[in-house]
Length: 167
Image (cartoon, rainbow, N blue to C red; front, side):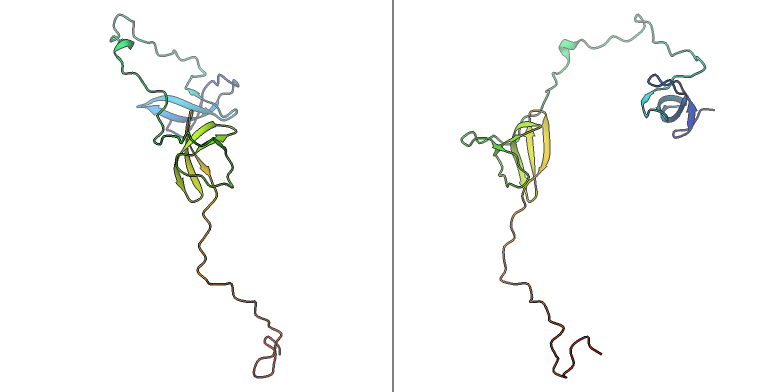
């Protein structure tokens, strides 16, 4: 009987050498991945009792792999959904500023990027390393003419002559 996912098990850790682990993944009844309780590392299950490793099929009996030349090329990064407005210079990114779609920003960590989506309080920016959601200034609210009420003075006498809150 094999241990269930989440159960404690003995396995040899390649990082710290400890043997106490938790089962993380299984393939059928076979334990595939474990988590070391000592160092927190994930790795394949290795029995501490020296159980033989699963051997691969000989190359002669393995099905041939598809040649690399016929595989479809994988695009490394997507393209930005919005073209950058090259007529304006790239602005340094600050969360306290407001940005518009098409603006270019210069972020200290991610480099230059193009604003794709601008919403109140956040922007989606396309950088060379991928898309990031960043903070931006929220729009100021439109005043409706209403004002905050004046504070009530509790020490003034009421029409009955007694101050409010008095005994």
